[in-house]
Length: 107
Image (cartoon, rainbow, N blue to C red; front, top):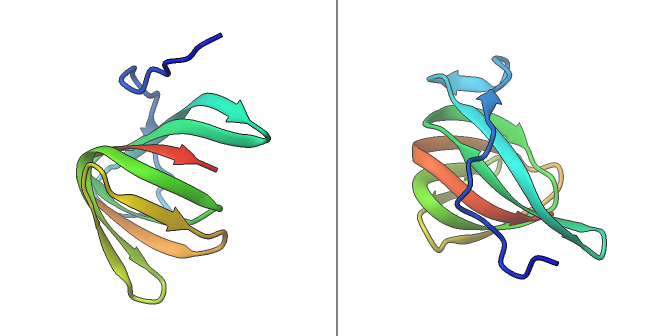
């Protein structure tokens, strides 16, 4: 049984689908940490660049890095360590990662 989850270990990343990349050559990936009552908790990381996405239901906390996420309705959220954000399934977003972003997600 693991009580302390390792959020510092490497996250395997792969280049993003070119159809979603707006600028740069970002790569992203995730590593599951635990599943609790059918909900996954994990670590997600994206390297610098700009990409679009369609979200799933998720709450996340930024561990390190910086980015700006813009939602389809025009709202912009600046991401830095400690920022907590709620994403809703189907939301269209654009992620501009300035410094490799690492977050803990609950989805």
